[in-house]
Image (cartoon, rainbow, N blue to C red; front, side, top):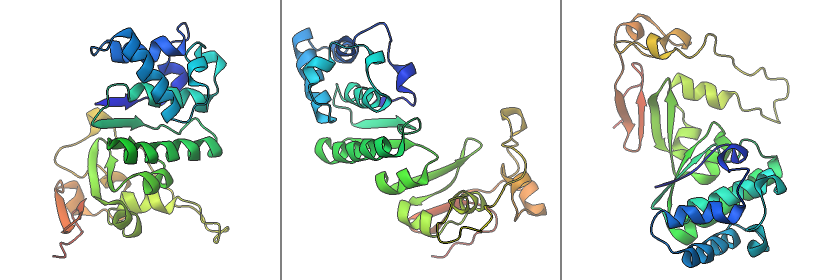
Length: 232
């Protein structure tokens, strides 16, 4: 298992050159310095960095945000992980660089066979990268299924609200929906009630008495809600 962290500026050591930072990941897992250096250069080339050998000798401050994110991806691949966890890998990047990083991740999935677990609030990125989606609220999965199915046919009120906040260029005057209230803190999360009840526009008495279980509505689509019926 390996991980790409959200902020490359914080994830990279500003006092170390890029090469040693990437190499230490491999060395810690048994590579020699020669093997680690070769693998680091290969990975930098794999993520689209030209002149990889030269990049090994620069400091993070000498790179742009997109370049640093590519370095983190190269570092995460040093030990050929079966699972790659990406925490908001495109958050701090502009739209053009975001698209480039997404293309790199798609390409890496195909070339290496590594499974990708993406943590993000950007449903556009999810639609391009993920085959399945798990929507979470207050630390709990409230809807899951195949990405296309969930995005086209959201069942949980929270998922509907998330998708409803995506602006539509064809409906410029449409007001985006707003969920009143805030996410409950850890101490306020009650086990015996729906965690979304206080903010849910469809809430009624049952929601504050019974905690819903995850139920399969179709064979590949599940939801945690008291008012969604099984269809198969």
